[in-house]
Length: 140
Image (cartoon, rainbow, N blue to C red; front, top):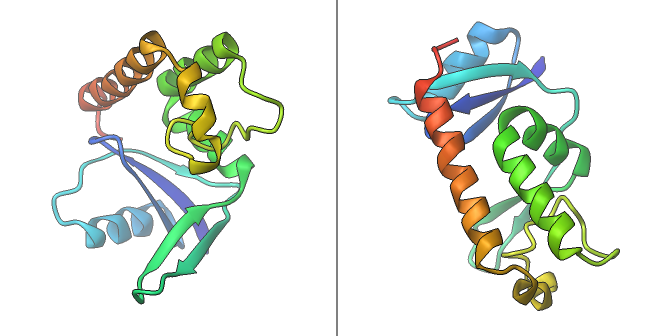
């Protein structure tokens, strides 16, 4: 089995294990009947942790910085550039992980003040650009 990342037209990703690309596409479609797949790519690295909550739910968290960096570089290049620019401008601390979402990470809450409106608008704009790019992209 091979791991594939399928980038959807709505900007979300699905990661599936499958024997080939066609099987990966089918597994992704089985998850959501109306899914439109923009791109399919074989993953070289992937790690996830599943946490059991007191309420009996499983929550997943990506662990591997390489996985996140790979997804950002290939599936979200515009967002990756915007986040990189904002990190460079507001100069996050050495202890911050570039793989973590600083705006939403409880441990890094102290840095939220470092993001000014320009950074927030830049990231929001990048998300819209990613979605527009995917909506206009030919189906692969």
